[in-house]
Each structure stands twice: as structure tokens, then as C-alpha cells.
Length: 361
Image (cartoon, rainbow, N blue to C red; front, side, top):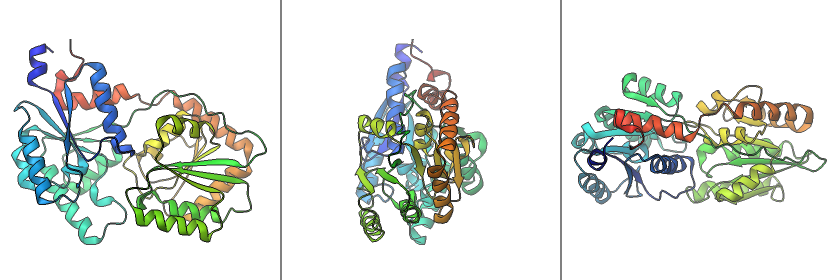
């Protein structure tokens, strides 16, 4: 790609809110921009208002103005947190330039009232119908878009999250209480209430749990979770660590004996492959493509929302150190086969720019 074409044609990645927010979706977006920068792919970040997916009329007008100020040849890669809430008229204005990035459909967020979910499902279906192409972060999301949003499969590119090579977790391997770890923002969809209910049934065993995730997105959920922990008498065993930086998170992974993901639904579930990359045994729910992709030798998988099944799986691995080690070994063996972020970034760039998505010469 020549320098002239680089200036004329690039990816404008439109993302609502604070791109530094500590969530998997924002982390994915940040990593794409970083990989493109390092590979020399012409791309830039365009900030959209943070009120999406429930934008005000003023914020919709701001988003339209920001998009209109981009170059006519720019490809508009729009994060689904915003794009799914675009009115059809706004999506239609830029239709031939839009590639929609769908982490998971907005209407599937846990805790929405039926009217809000129906409105989001309707707006996302109409908006996606206008986009020239779509990126899905998993095959599960792609299949949902085809089945429930009438998007032709040939318009969808799957780009699963990448992973970074990481050192194997040290784990305790001793007589101390097992360190359990769950990672993700404290929102209803993450199912932390189910996890606390499961662990309350295991109070006779030696364990501690750290939940590393932002408490800022659903304050009522956080408060209810704190009350539940207190009622169960587990306040001295469960730590809500809040959002943590990459260094602190790496330290938490290193000291973890068992990783748990109790989510009710995930478009992918990046934390699962992060845990796999550290060689950790895993207990998770069958709530997304990430769980489907985990080798059964590394993870015990249970139905989402089933506290009894979750408790049984966690108890099994607490009580069986030999099995935990076998599953940790299986996770570490599988880690070398995980996709890397540079491959993911290349797939997305190619879907946006075609042959121009390669490194700039």
C-alpha cells in the first residue's frame, strides 16, 4: 500500500465512551488499535459519546457529526455497543462505509426489561441490515446474527480474541486455602450471585475467592452482591478487588489455583483464554464460544445459572489436587495453540480494507 493510499483510505474505529474502561470489549478494541499501529495499518480511534446503547438525541447528533467529518474513503468500523443503537436513518447515511463490530447482541445483556430488550433487538437488526459487513468476536455470535438478525453469513467475518504468551501460574501446591479467581465487571450477566451461592455451600472447605472487576457499571448489582456475601458469612473469604491493572491482574493469575467463570452469557469470554494461557484449571459455565473452545481436559463446564452444578464442580477440584494438576497440565499444553492478537488484528483489518489490510510498505 502506498503512502498516498494510506492517507486516503484507513480504518476509523468508532467506539463509545472511555476506551480505557476495564472490560473485555474495550480491551479487545484497544488491542486492535495497538496491533494496527505496530503493523503499520492505517487506522485511528474515533470517540463517540458514552451514553450508548441508550443515547440521547444530542449524543446521536454528535455521533452523526463525528462520523460525517471523516474522509469519504475511510472505512467506519463501529463498535456494536454504539452501532446496535443507531437509528436506521443514521446507519443508512453511511451504509456503504460501515463495518459493524459485534461483541455480542445488545438485547442479550442480562437485566434488561423486556421493552428495552425488544427495542434494542429491533434497532440492532435494522442497523445491521444496513452495514456492508460485520465482524463477530465468535462463531456463536455469528450464528446468532444469522439466525436472529437476518444477516447473511457471507457478510460476517469471525475474529476471535487473541492471547499473549504468559508464564505458567505458580499456584500454591501446598496445604493453604486454595485461591479462587474470577475476572470481569460486576454486572448481572457475569453471574457472581450464582458463584457466591455455590461457594456458600462449600463453606466447610478451605478456599478464598478474589473477584477482579469494575464495580462502576451496575452499582445496584454490586450492593446486592455485598449483602449476599455478608449474609452468607463469607466477607472474610471473598474479596471484591475492583478493576485492576495488567500488573496486578498478572499477579492474581500467578497466585491462583482455580479459575472460575460463572457468566450467564458471553459473546466469547476472553478471560477464559487468559486463564488457559496461564495453565490454570478452570470451572466455567457453557455460556459462550470461549467455553466451547476450551478443551474438556482443562475445564469442567456446567449450565449457566445452576448454583448446585457450579458448587459440585468447584468442590470436585478443591477435593482432588491430582485432578487439578492434570487439568492445569492440559491447560498449559493447550495454551500454545491459542490465536495471537496480531492474527486477530490482521483478520479484522482485511475484512475492513481487503488487500489493503496488510502492513504498510
